[in-house]
Image 1 (cartoon, rainbow, N blue to C red):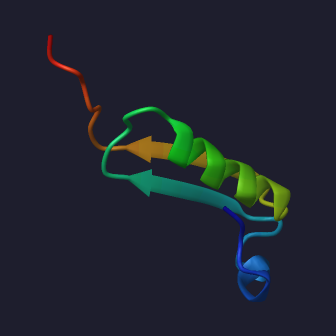
Image 2 (image 1 turned 45 degrees about the horizontal axis):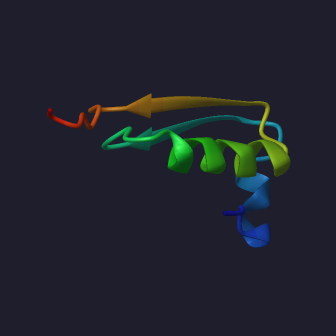
Length: 56
């Protein structure tokens, strides 16, 4: 995952918030946050609306 170089100005030096509708294993949000930070984001906050749980 990476920030589109043509959109990097929307990320660099700014605070970004990433929103996902589920938070099953953290991998997607973590990878997106990493990409934003590598593109120069000042901070990245993560918000998930639901937690996917495995029922026993």
